[in-house]
Length: 180
Ligand SMILES: [Fe+2]
Image 1 (cartoon, rainbow, N blue to C red):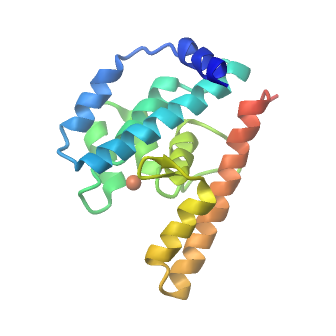
Image 2: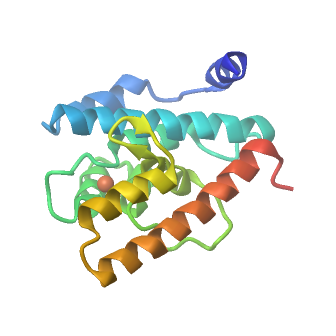
């Protein structure tokens, strides 16, 4: 398995030095645990992007997956943090990464099938709790324990979990097989 991940890493052709995105994240003055979470999500989204591209060359822009994951919670300290993060990124001219950040909470426009950088960051955020890769079911169990005090919230979390599982199963398919 290590060999496989090394191959994925070697195949990553980054057009932008990774430290550009890391600097931008660090400029946001976030708590250390949020930065650590962002790094975990960025690494996982980039890993999945590399794995998908092994079977499906250049299907995913690995830089956008990595930067989108790294920056998805860059405005975590603000209300509507996904919109605020996207606004900052658009102001800097990073529109594609802004679209990924904007969609990371609910993935509002998903067509039920397509996997892009947006879906990778959304799903990576749903399998990682803090910095641990716990999986979707455990991530939602934790969320329900913390926030699920009424029926509306529980059914909202149930719907969100179902969608996350559907997205994840499409990602797993692409990691194993070619898309066509
Ligand atoms: Fe977030």
